[in-house]
Length: 311
Image 1 (cartoon, rainbow, N blue to C red):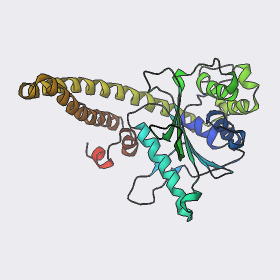
Image 2 (image 1 turned 120 degrees about the horizontal axis):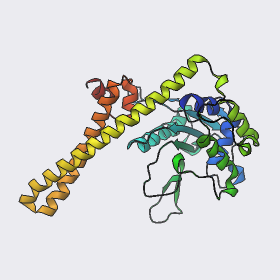
Image 3 (image 1 turned 90 degrees about the vertical axis):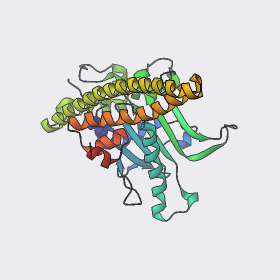
Image 4 (image 1 turned 90 degrees about the horizontal axis):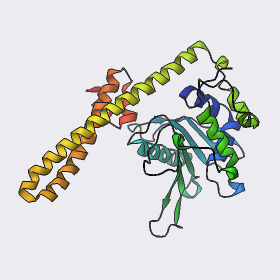
């Protein structure tokens, strides 16, 4: 038996965007619900396209969006590559989902929480060995004071290792499903198949279940991912070199007038700011040269669509 990778756009949306029982099991396993009564008992899929209230504002599309029996909303995203603006994009999408509830004429007291679950096929916290990150709006001095409404979970899949998690068995099984199955898999581990939810999710990955056009789109997806990673690595290296050169040059120039220490500090700050902008522009040029759609480039880089079209 041949399988496809569950982290690809096609397979991820098929498994978790078409099977309410599977996304419910997945969310209950990975979200930090404190009480058994907080667990999801049923789900209803919502439109993954988050259209803004103001027609001149930006809309966006998420992988999976649904709500449960209490009206809580859940956004699930599979992100293949970490970018500096990704957290802002997550906040942006969750905020739109939260405020969109007011379209129904509800008062503020009826607003239900929004949970944003983000699976990353990449790492972003270089100084931490933890793979699971739980973000909430917390008062900085008294951490018991929390503003409820939005909660953000980031899971760095490359850091996950299935050990010492016996009290979170389903979380481990689902993360093993995401990280251990790919095109090279010929035999799925028995402990995964013993669970009915995981077994059903595994059957959705069988290559024979996909059409030729779907398989072609699947291969195209991985081509785009590889190109993006290559372009981003190249752009990042150029930006780092430019920041270093401009920061040192500016530091020397201002250091002569105001003191070497102060000049280096201010010059480096200005160089960093300019370097980030150059990094985004370089990345955008590379992606445009590869033929990627301007809307996708804008989503990844955070640059205005007009700026990308002008490149």
